[in-house]
Length: 210
Image (cartoon, rainbow, N blue to C red; front, side):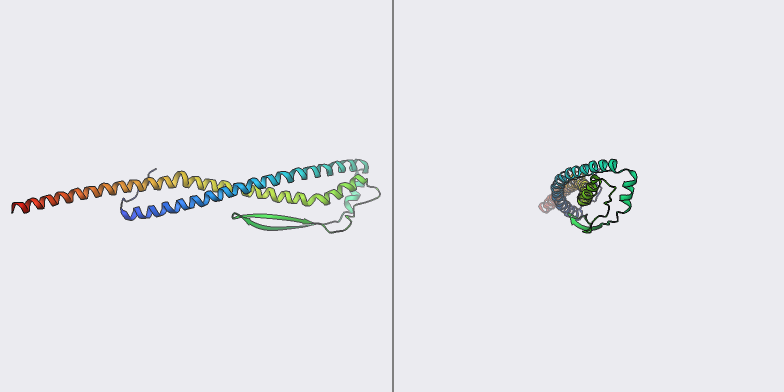
């Protein structure tokens, strides 16, 4: 759709300034997009590696837990869980990266006996709980990284849409309108020069008759 404007020099100047601003904005957004892509794929690599570690850790915990539950029995398991009073502390901080607010999670446990060991529990169940307390912070870290990935992906999509809107819509529209105004102004200027030359010829003709 063509932009409807008055083809005058003031409008031409305004559109040229707007085009220059749009090009600068496009360059900045393009740079931001490239940096976001680099950070995104770097974080994807980190998150993928951490997820493999966490999956391995919790697979091991699950195996110990299932074995311990089978050997301990339902009542023994409920007794072990009922005396477990260990509480961790979850801390949430924020950092900004490329204008994106990214939460950072931290999890700490008090340095004391988890208080779940009973004579009736299987050593496998004890091992499962010990490993859970040990590796739970890794799970929290993974959650933070995946949250950051979602936020980066969302910002990347927003930036991509803005870049495309400038590159394929606004800048071509402004450029086309500027060319159209320049063409009309040039045509008007040529018409004015033609009329001036005709007037000049008429004046000279009258002077020659006198």
